[in-house]
Length: 404
Image (cartoon, rainbow, N blue to C red; front, side):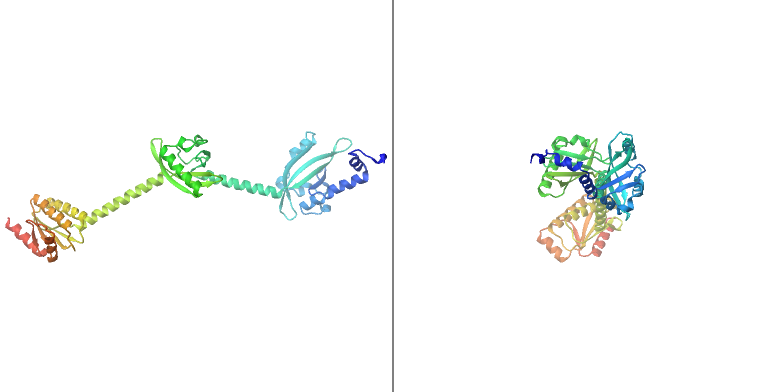
């Protein structure tokens, strides 16, 4: 019994020291490995290859033996790792690792990571190179896709003509992406680690805090606009706040000064056009028609409200002064209704005309208008009236000739 006892590492030592068992173990490790194993001579030609290595590039083992490894290496990668291999040949390294591309039999690209060591003869010279090959195509393609995505995202961010800021729910600035196209209130780095109230004017800080709370609470995009002094000039900005991550908000700050200036200019032009149109309509609504020397007629058409009545008065006084009129015929034939307020305005206009030394003839006073004025107890005073414009013209001409 005692002769059969062994130390703890006895079985392993005897297994490796026993030639048949050792060869079987090494053969199993070589043939059944999930990674490629290549045995290459000093001339770069394959002297051995396991099944996993051959399958990796779509060949049978026998098809690869005797071929140079550059025959299935991507042409652009033929020199990859050469400097490291040279260092290993000089004895400066025992093992070197690098990545490169193989070309599969079907033409597809296989990314591999190589771990190369040397096998030296009894004379100490390199006899062969032993290479372990890992297929890293999936990882490499995933990494490259991620790198492309990051480059695209970085390009998009760099191309944005705006400032990006990241804040937490408490309004503390966490990160930023500056823009060379935007004028800034302060350098972006000045914001980091500070709350909005520490770096922005109180009204704007309050506006952003409210927008921040709304964004965090609703998880929706919120946009605010504000004006801030930069240098000696006010600048218009738009801030779009969007939820990002856990309780964080990204803020897209855009200088909209040019757009706002254009909008204000457009609004001013529109207002000017509307005012000009209103003035033209008012002039059309109160035409002054010279009838004879020192006689003018003003035919009114359409409803008259208090505003138009004021304009009529202004036009009448200007017409009297411009034409040196002695008689003004105010024709209300085309006015559908005369309210008490409008009648009072017209009577006030006739009194103002009298102060300029002219008299007013009220033409087109229909029976129903007369009844309305009587019911309203409107006192026409010494204002003469006529039923029709023709009658009013005749009276005016007679009055004018009679005064000569």
